[in-house]
Length: 136
Image (cartoon, rainbow, N blue to C red; front, side, top):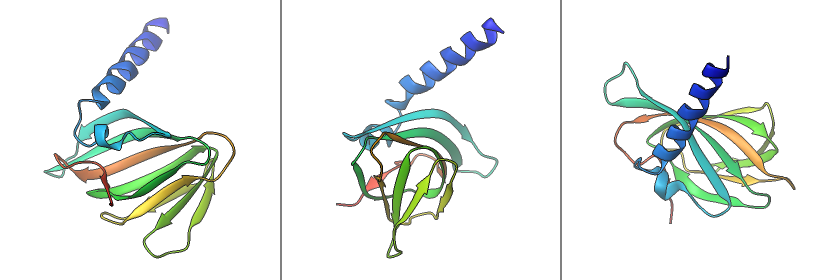
């Protein structure tokens, strides 16, 4: 069991360090957020990959409008997060809630609580493109 835990710890550490060498992740790091890539794999569909990341957002911080070159599936791990997708009214989710964001949809996220919030973000995206494009 100890060997399995050590392997997991090493794998997570390597994945975290690799985050900074991956296209899209360096640009994605913004003050008030922490994004940790957990895994990345090619899919059976040519030119597509899946990326999973833990995204932490500090209290009161808003991540600006942005889009992804593919789908994003969100599972809120802790706290309360408010999402705004396109022209739709904002939706606030709590731990255990899920959200689907279509490819190319412009959206933003805000920590709507008084403590750090976190989500598990799963991206099914075009390989080789920046993961996040911030809208200026």
